[in-house]
Image (cartoon, rainbow, N blue to C red; front, side, top):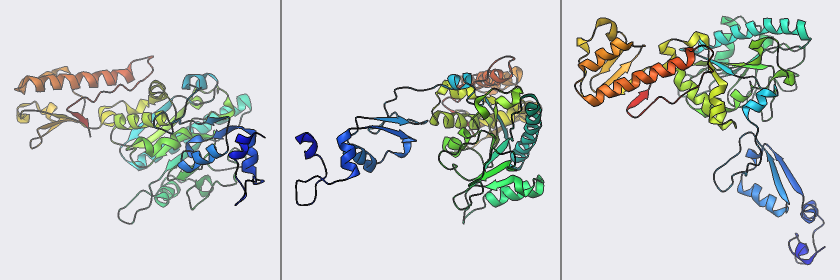
Length: 389
């Protein structure tokens, strides 16, 4: 033992004699530390303990490495979504459908679960592999000040409106542990719907989870960040014969596909995917191809008043003008002629250009989803003076 090593060991109080402790033993061996789920090891105390144990190096395994700040990770190796897909490790893409109310979102999720279960039985007859598709439903937290779509509300809707047997529903929250000690992959297990609030337990893994259904609008990436990742794991790490079983599904209550898609993209980026991979992971459901659910209402701030009464009756049904705010609200898809009609009654050139720019953005965004044989992407369309509400 070198004098320098002895100098840094913990000592018996009042003497220079090293304490016989595990910490001192680890220090002397200068070990390699391997830390799983390293985002949980980011406090000052954690770093102080690690320093005290004298590691030769620290290897972190993490899906969400921190790349900024003094406690950032030095990323040595990363695995892309394309590589994961090539190895049949993830379901890809995530088919997204937004609807205006949470009841419809749950109803759509239940129908999809039933459709997938029929396909899994056909898959089992071909390959012998058992799969029981599971829906993850994210309820809101309880509140003493306002009404929320909480766990009880969601469970009652499943039981009474969707007629789901109670043994197929489990609640997994901090206080209720409906899936604890359950083998969700077992043929004898009946659970098909799991209701939770926030993230499930760290390390929770069930490749049977195919469908994500938050019952309230996904207003930020944090709302769905961890739960969205729970539906990506591919059962048995093996491509399925039925194409629908090679993808995941998200049913979200929202008045804007655009906003929801952007927030879910951010969720995937926060979960470790690149921005390009995240955009490729999300695909619009065929049911979504209408203007309202796609965009919500698009608002354009104008610098001069709009004489809406001078527009054609048909165009007036597609827009709204908020005179006090000098804001044009586009509520439905407008065609080339209607776009020109709008431009013709505007007096200022800058407003005409703004209408033209919004029209071209809408056209490009819509085309990216309805063009045949084209993988959808989510270009950033909102420019200065345009907001999606």
